[in-house]
Length: 147
Image 1 (cartoon, rainbow, N blue to C red):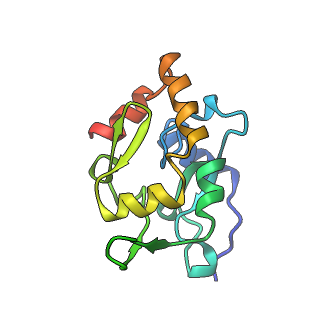
Image 2 (cartoon, one colour):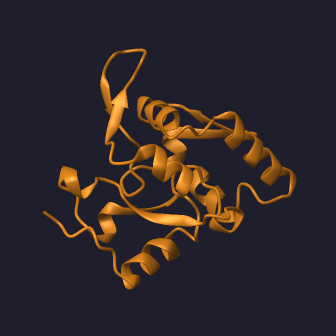
């Protein structure tokens, strides 16, 4: 089993490569009083490694909702679908930003948006306030949306 400890250099690499934004909801760390965390995309208990290829930057809200889950059931089809993987997937292929709403456009997007609660009332209100302040989406987020 991999050691779950993430050293300072690895934390810095993960944060820097994202320009300090959550790789799931694209909110900048500077807009979160709780900041962001380095997260195992595939948790150690499921065999995930503590390497740059298996780590992402996630805000506390996305990270707490995701937990150690790998995916969920698509309610339309009954199929088990994996979550969006920031190391393998392009955000703009699975989601689109419609004002403050993160709209899923694939099965992967649907289960990820639902489980990570992208469009809960408080999260939409937060993004609306950030949009009004000209802080969402950031230039770094736009790159992930339009790549």
